[in-house]
Length: 111
Image 1: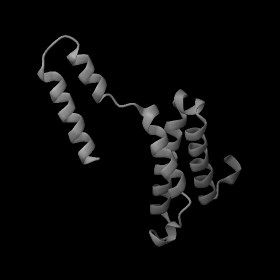
Image 2 (image 1 turned 90 degrees about the vertical axis):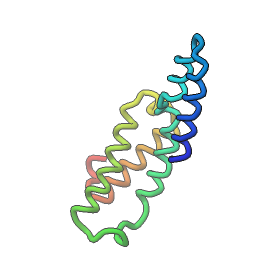
Image 3 (image 1 turned 180 degrees about the vertical axis):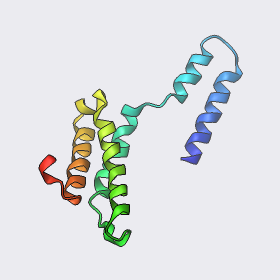
Image 4 (image 1 turned 45 degrees about the vertical axis):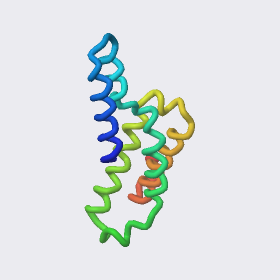
């Protein structure tokens, strides 16, 4: 995280240092966030983490539910993207997160 953002900032500074034509567009393209490329890297670990035993981290109750809601919001946000729904791997990971969260919270009828 920290090294990647420092590397991106250095690349942007190097790209804009020349001041020639087209350099600004290249620098902006390098700094643009591409959700489609990162989505699979986010959803697969979430799909694995949602299957872990949270009883060791939380006592049953509100805190666990809040933590689970963080997972569901991420999965729903991912499924709202057309690129995610078209790609099988991130779509399956997001669906797994939603199904596991629903099962954990006892809401199996709506999943």
